[in-house]
Amino acid sequence: MSVRYIDVLSTPQRFQRSGVSFREISYQVLEEMRNVNTLVFDEDETEVVPFFMDDMTMLDENIEQTRQCYQGLEALKKDIECTKDRTAQDSSIDDELRREKLHKYDEELSRVETGIMDAKFNMELFVYIQALEAEKQKSNALVKRLRDENAWLVEELATSQKKCQKLDLEIIDLKQDLENFKYLHSLEKFDESKEDYDSGRGTDIFEYRPLSHTRTMQELGFDPEEEDTTSNNLNVHSPTNSLTTRSSKNDLLGLSSVTSASISALDDAPTDLKNLYSLINQLIAQGNFDPAISATKKYMERVKKERGEKSADYATVLYLFAIIYKEQKKFKEAIVFLKNALQIREQVFGAESAIVACTLSTIGVLFGKMGRFADSETYASRSVELRKSIQGADHPEVAKFLITLGTAQIGLKKYAEAENSFQQALDIYEKRGGPMDQNSLKTKTQLCQALIKQGRIQEAEVKYREMILAAHQKKFGAPTTSILDVAEDREINKRKDPSVDDEHVKKCVLVMKEVPGVLPALKQMANIFRREKKFDAASLLEDVAHRSSKEIKNNYQVASMDTSTISDSSNGQ
Image (cartoon, rainbow, N blue to C red):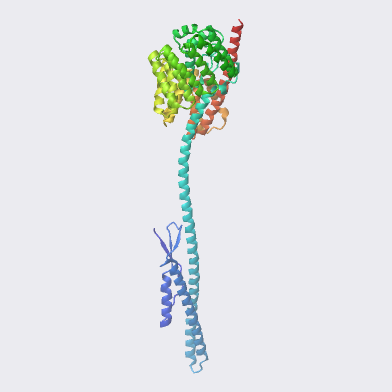
């Protein structure tokens, strides 16, 4: 530290005295003062530090010595004045000598008074320096406290930032879980006219939908298998439509990949079993579960007497019980009936038959709904292996079963295995229907979820972008500007006026209506943008997703009304 020195005790006069006693006093005072008359300044003059021999202790000693010097000078002054008075009154001294002595006394008095003034100045300066030192110590203590507080605040900020990052990751996981639950209940959200559906219009007796309904619940891997299980199981021994056998065949041919043997087995189903199935569908649709159970019990007693407890029809009746209890969310009871049906079907059709594989998959689905993912994985794995051996590894039904398996593995936090299952299913769907097939899009969304669970968010983002861009190109052709480009441009330019992007938003809503399987990818990109602090871009995507959801909901309602009208007119004819 470079310093400069300032002599704060410099005075225009110094003691000059030949007298021994006076010179000793003057010499001692000045030498002690020279030890304390320096102030040290930093080069930038931000600090002023008194340069003492022993800090405050030496300063106190100097003040005391200066006070003693002052008292000595006062006594000396009185002594000189007394001597001067005696000399002036002494008549024995010659006048000329008296005048000379008086003149010398006046000079000495002048010097003593100068010394007294210097002593007073030094004492006041020492007191002032002492006060400055006290203020400096107080300021240093305050600075130290502020530095400690600042260090604590910096440490707290770092801790809070780490917690924030951890909470951001937890929020991403929670949003993923929320999306999963939304998928499970998407029909209740989008299908408000559900009560208008004919009870058996679809091939899936677990959910009553119009044939054109997009099965958004496939994105979680449960309902596709459930659809496969119920359609194939009842294809063998019961109709899949509560209206006519002919329409049930058409539904099977149009919506599920069943074999010709399954359809021929449908023709062999007893008429009374078909009527029972139709009645059960209607009662379940109306929420009348007790009458449905009563009717099924009566028919079970009849089948037990006529065909026995080991017959295929008896297994189908058990399966109907499972449907009724499943609709009441009584999954445990439903699984008991399904396991009994599984034992009978293994004996009747063989342990490696397609209907056994479907039953295994349905049990795995219900275990998944109960949160027992280990059991779900066990049954799903068996059903996948059976399907592969029966229909080949590239069959779409295998892909559905793989999705059930992947969903169970997600529940068990086996994310790498789930990724492999979803990737296999995606390869099958893309090979059959292309990358823009609804099943391909939904399976790709599940694959991205498995990647995010592993922390591979960038890989998932790339796939989401590919899906959204491909959907835009399908609608408007290539090259085209996707909504992601618009959102990122909005973030960069900080556009606050939403009307500027209205045209792009409307185009994207049209894309989502035409390819609804891309909507989950759009929502996930909004979550990713928000995680990256791109709030303007995220808000735009969330707005598009909200509008698209409303449009898709309206489409479902219109499709439901149209399908109901067509069905009623065909029945009238």
